[in-house]
Length: 192
Image (tube, rainbow, N blue to C red):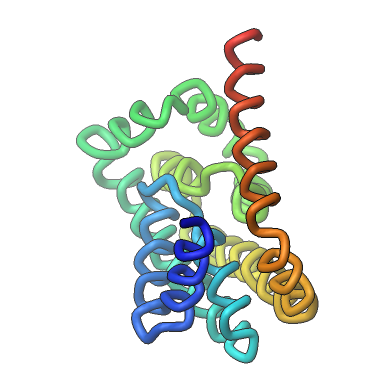
């Protein structure tokens, strides 16, 4: 069953609908959706390494436009939509700290948020709420989201073929290890 799911994922990643789907996910992740585009970039580049740069460009462009949507949610719709998104993900305290830091560190907050696994939607909405200047926000978003997605694409393009062969050879064991680590993480969280 795992092998069929893996094969289906790789076929879908090479399909003609993969890039539009990636654009939708990258856009949504920057403004309200919890799943990062990396989960699509990885199989897409592994399936078609010759399109790595195009895949990264699609993710970057859609993420920056989605970041602008998040900014507008924060600037124009925070009371009706933005606060609900922040509350839904439980980022209320982090959000309040971000607002206080924007006066001195706004650009660096955008840079760090764009490069790290921290949910970028929090940064985009907070930027809008703080009315952080739009041009530095867009420049920071373009630079950091581009750096992140192009780095992932480059590493997969250069090291993807041996990685894909390794995954395909050891898929059963890797799946078992992942499930055990996931269960172990849940157990550890309950014990803390």
